[in-house]
Length: 300
Image (cartoon, rainbow, N blue to C red; front, side):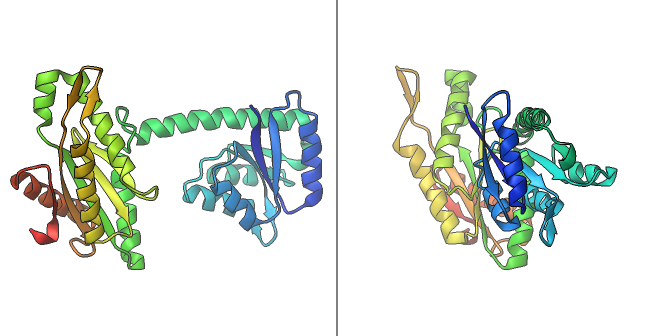
């Protein structure tokens, strides 16, 4: 498999030199692309289409350290190897602190050295990505876990208030889930949890966030969405579960329903904890109303 590598460097000669290095690699496993500006490099890096990035320290009026910080701050996890003409220890430390995985001095680079650095960065990047998944994802469903969801919720609430955006939240609970476990066993309960998670994720946009909040409860965070949109998603989620039974093997299909409660910031709350509490109260109202339905906090 050929892996695409991005070089961000404002010097065309450096691109030609790096190309020549790639042509001398022992294994023809990489394809080099070039971005000559800070803006172009950042856009390509955030696209997620590259296995690794070689990043120059000097990029016109701005530098590579600034680009690393901006890319990492916007969720980029592409392994980055920092290139600089300086040998100062300060640059080395700053690059690593900013998020680079390796550091090379331009005047000392050889084809063997840059190939080794790419192998190292890719391997370390895979390890860090695996650790990131363990730290932020629920093992059973693959959704965000509670800790990561709480972090994102706090950040998005702060951002929504700062820029005057709305933020919707839907809390979802599987109806009578204990009875499913008691009747059919926990392995089948796990099948239900995974299928509910899959259908929840299918009902939202890529910018939204879905998490396993705990047990059989899920949370859906809807970016720039007010109360009507949150209620619409809550109703769609209920319908997505009710309409099609959950298959558990060839012989068994269970009718699974959920209850959902919706709230929105700033209409129902001003902070993350209050937004969750409002959606929880709406969820309780949906359960009290007979389950398999959605409720909006402001209507209770």
